[in-house]
Length: 614
Image 1 (cartoon, rainbow, N blue to C red):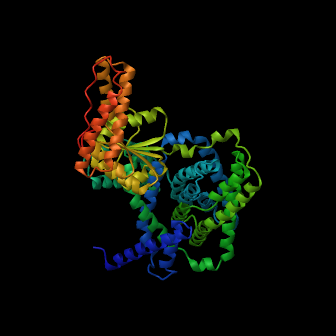
Image 2: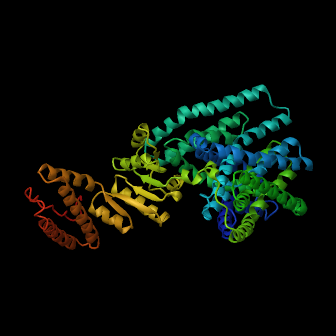
Image 3: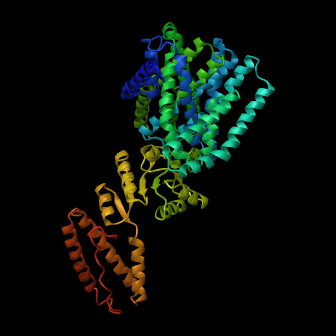
């Protein structure tokens, strides 16, 4: 059983994070800074709640493993192939040029070349979370510099993985422990994770999904992540590399979004704990004694990265103001740098003193980010107000279409109704994401080439994992009316401005959907009217008149649906409305009797009873 001290420590850490994160966000700062500040406050140089940060850091590193797994889920081979030019061109240039310049400065400062190289690469990385959040809040993800920033961040996510794999090897070379046996073990572990994952993970998830037991699916997801990480760790490599490979293997899987939604809560909590532990290890006394050195490091970091990013923006044909905004969005340090510095410290590539200085430099750059960007944005706006913006260059299509990669439509439920919707979207090349809770249905659609993911659309975490915040239209087509309504309520609560179209089983279901501000589509109405029109034609009515009469019937029935919606909780009023509607419909067709005299008038259609299938 955990001791009372462990319980108290856990409660203190959770409470501190709960208080610190909202407070920092209120002042425009990112959650990573809140966690670091919490760690500093609770650590040996703060109030001393924890005097042994390494005890927490060992467990919290699992959060880094899960972060790398989620990054792998986002980097499918198809996505990389589509964006390869801007990702590997602009992104590669930014990372390697910035890293060489920063590593050169660290080398002059006296750090060993291996440590300087690793630290330079860590400093070259920017915060993906902060960068994308800023672009999204400012609605600039679709701009030319927003797309280029997206490509640069994507490459940084990619390069971080081999960087973590190389750090232990560089440490091994320094300590004369790298042998051909170690290299063979590393290659064997890579092969085991890759080929074993391809053979086992999909099959295991498929079997578990059929059990319809969420806790077993969660356990399987955690086993895939931690098992891959453990295999790599046993071979002397970074455990995060194994988790990343596992994520890539599942990136194109139908279970991708379900797995991500299961892992996300663990990742967020443990990653926050990791940054708290990093904050506890910062030596404030040393930093307070070297304010000029730390401030100079921050200035050097910002100037080098800003200059490189501005140059890349101009080479990519961005106008000067947009090149400035590209630099201002990505010149800060990134949360992944803390992971790189910690790994370098673990294998003795950097000293404890230099580790603390590097962490302080990155943390301060992130703290200054909101203020610096506000000042830069004001400067750019003044400039654009004085000068008309230059026309976009013809090569703008070479910049990644990041916004277009996001789904515009989310289809919940891909049964006999939803399949027609997704086939039409696919034929029009409209980006969409489809969710289905039946693993058998998912397999059937996947075999026919459809793009569909396993998961329950009534869960908020799954919607977020599927990219619902970018969706313009939600189409809810689930078979079960209760599930249908739960999904609609959830979407309406999370995305109140969204356009929602929903499948309705019958009139009562349609009215309940209308209560939620949703446009209902009765599942049998269209096909039933097609059959009715064919009957009229078989009886001899001219095709144009039959189509016109069916059109009148549909308009009348939809008007009746809206009229009865106002009183649908009153059975007597609905019954009276149905009787009156039948009379009105007879009069409507009687008025057109002369035109349809070629055949005997068809029997008057019945108005549906209250709650009927129509």
